[in-house]
Amino acid sequence: MSVSTVSTEASDGPRGRVGSDRTGGGFVGAFTSEWTKLWTVRTPYVCLLAGLLVTAVFTYYYGSIARINDKPLQPVGNASVSSVVLTQFALVILAMTTVTSEYSTNSVRTSLLWVPVRPRVQLAKALLSALVGFVTAMVWAVLGIALAWGPFRGHAEFELSKVAYQTVAMGVYSALICVMTVGVSFALRTAAGAVAMIFFVVSALPGMLVGLGGPVLLAINAYMPQTVGGYFMLGDGEAPFPDAVSVLILLVWAVAAHVAGLCVLRRRDA
Amino acid sequence: MITLRELTKRYGETVAVDGLTLDVKGGLVTGFLGPNGAGKSTTMRMILGLDHPSGGEALIDGRPYASMRHPVREVGALLDAKALHPARSARGHLVAQARSNGIPVRRVDEVLEMVGLAKVARRSAGAFSLGMYQRLGVAGALLGDPRVLVFDEPVNGLDPDGVRWVRELVRSLAAEGRTVFLSSHLMSEMQLTADRLVIIGRGKLLADTPMADLLAGSSLSSVRVRTPDAADLRTLTGHLLKDGAVSVESPAADELVVKGRSAEQVGDLAHRLGLRLHELRTVSASLEQVYMELTARSVEYETGDTVSGGTGTGQTRGVGA
Image (cartoon, rainbow over all chains, first blue to last red; front, side):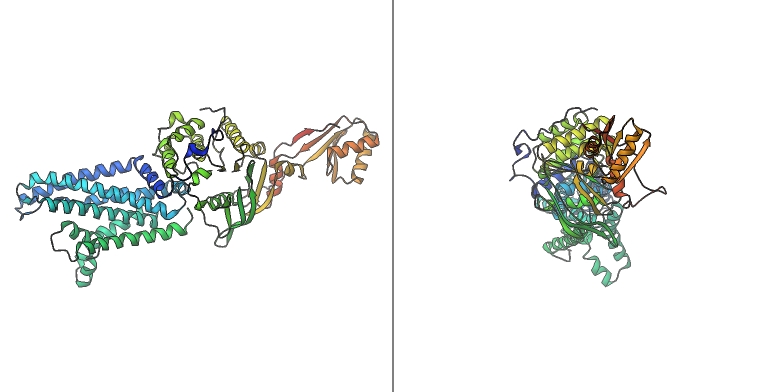
């Protein structure tokens, strides 16, 4: 490769070649940059495909087992809700790598050169992950419902309003889990640390709390993200909190993770 | 213009950058030199808002970098060319950069063409050589057509053609009135590229001066005189020492090396004394020699050998005398 002539081609034209001084940049610029970064690497596609496959297999299996075991009639969307226990981790990986891959490759410095307002970078990544998590989870939910309907063979009921509620609830839950993951990732910076923390808080700890039992531990478990999310997504009237409170609890988890992430991001050198 | 005022960075007890105060002006290439660990990269990172100063401030055109709405359009920076996702294509990387600052995507193709990476624009950056990384980094720095450019070791890993390309590029950028601040460990290259030099050692400012003044003012610069007559040589030696020369040495029977006097002063003296000269020329110290002399006591990581003198060949400049 050889370049012998030099021209910046920059001085001969107005600065309009690089955009108007009043357009672009800011939060919109940060978000569109994050959007571009997300879809120009392979990881998100692998995560989405993995989630899709798990949804397909899990919901089909769920419907079949419900029929085989002659379970009582239930909303068809329960199949998709149950698959979220697994598929949420595909979205966790997707959201996490938007942050941790930048620390592992040092490209976080480059990102902060483009968008030096650090909370703006964090917010852009959080909103992008939330958007992807929301839309993807709803697509998976619909797919899961469609795939489970056959093997249920009459052991599930299809009520449009219930299906719509559960689909949107899965989107909201997944979006907030993604937002929480971005916050944790900024706080811990490494993929191993972030995924371990998310797995512990979302999956392992609730299992331990229920396993050990007792009123205190069960009361604590009622506020854990996956427990709250499970009741919220099922929407079967057995939730200890109204929907708004469930969303608020999930929001508190997400905000707490982001406050921790922002403290680290602000204080530490890039 | 880049303005540093008492810029300081401490890591615990260690002071990496110690009260740096200087101005990096537009229209010039300002070289930034210092031994490993002197604080160059830390200073550059503080200028660009990546590291938080422990004290003082770093401003670009009077503002902190972090306050700029379109920083990529105002400051082009190449710090670590490999600081990008290896699975992302060169074009994808630059498109993300362009969108972050509202720069039209067509500008991406322009800069890729400019740096010679158009043909590999869609290849993953992870497959690039170090030289290609550097070119991509330069493309990123030029993307926003900025008035200020900060380059940290831009020629690292480039072949001779690439080194010359960067030299001509930064010269042309400065000629357009832009502020160019670059660091390099290649002294010969810096001597060819920079108009002004900032040298730091152990975080402290050692020199902030035009290149020509630095070289001319060095104690390593000298005047070489040749005369065929041994008596004339002795006469000239005596008068030079009386006239204020720092040292006069005679490495050969017909030759003197004079320090502390200019070629013009030696020539005038010889003329007054009626001495016949066969040669009179200035032997300028190389930047490497001057740099070694300045930083000898500031080297943080050194081998068992004493750092001294420098190994570069002095540059000569004839004087019409």
